[in-house]
Image 1 (cartoon, helix red, strand yellow):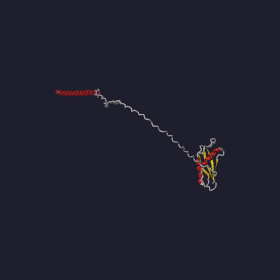
Image 2 (spheres, helix red, strand yellow):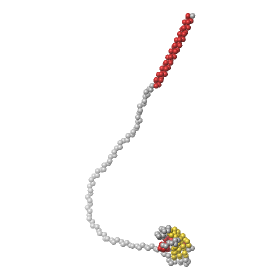
Image 3 (cartoon, helix red, strand yellow):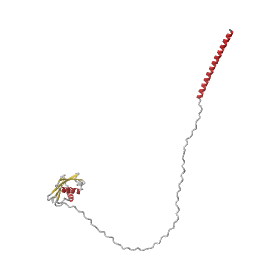
Image 4 (cartoon, helix red, strand yellow):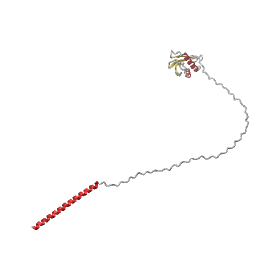
Length: 228
């Protein structure tokens, strides 16, 4: 019995020793783990100095141009003194007197006188009247009749001894220009009718309208009479 108790006590002691060793080992492991974690936290929280690269300033390449060489101003050449040649002696010579000639006389040539158009003969007559009965400037109508009559050259030998009448109508503007003329009454002979129209057109411009006349234009009926 005594041996059994002793044997049981030894087992208990061994168990207790193992339990104590296990607990001690666990505590050591826990302490070691805690210490390692603490050291890791401290290691991470510490800011370690880092190596910074020195700032290298940028390098600029500059091309240096050669300095301009001042141009040498050419100096004018020194002129050697030129010896003047002696002036030749002038020989006095007598000028021969040339006889004076009278200038040629200008011949005066008379300019040919302009041919005047033949005025209306007794076989030709012009009668004129206006569209305005109140037109009282007869001197103006006479000047128109004379100017047109001097330009009228009716063809000869076309009336066969009969009286032929041509009536024209046209307008005279303020400046003497003419609108028309138109044939109001023909003679039946085209050459005669055309001669009256040509006489009016060749007389243009006619004298300007009288200043006292206030109309913008003056209507005129011109009657040509021709008999061979």
